[in-house]
Image (cartoon, rainbow, N blue to C red):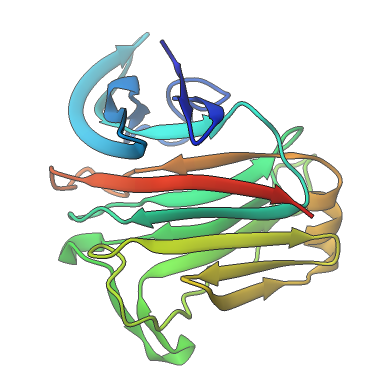
Length: 229
């Protein structure tokens, strides 16, 4: 069974293109790394080697992708980020009809230290939790990347506390909030033109950025909420 019901909505436990991304063979989307218990979504990472018609991938990750498509409105989760080396949890949207556009409400990176401490003083940031956006031409598959940017100086450790991550998508801007604090606003006309031209799918996933990841990762999410404008 690939689909689950969580937070009152139906979700795929893979991406629309299949069980792994053809340009990233570090991991595949493992249905058994997705669990819902007492309303809590748990996205895990596990060593689970699998051969996809000659493509060998050793790590399974938990991912959910919305069956429903969304446009303008407010998108929010409350979650505790996973701990471990070289992890890459994320909450993001991308276009129904094309990629780009993509808005990353957050991408977290633990790297080799096993935590999200970043101390990016130029951006007044303590945590390596980033906003990001992709947009641009589709014909030659190039895109412009607005970011990444890490300018969140919240005092609560995102891997030790359940914090809120929210995006408000308006026709003239996209605003990102971390734990009720506004951390970034996108107003780029090229981005908004591409984003506003279609509906988007919501993705929440655990992931890895290196084959040297450490076991025990568990990305816990209390809920997903959407409200239209």
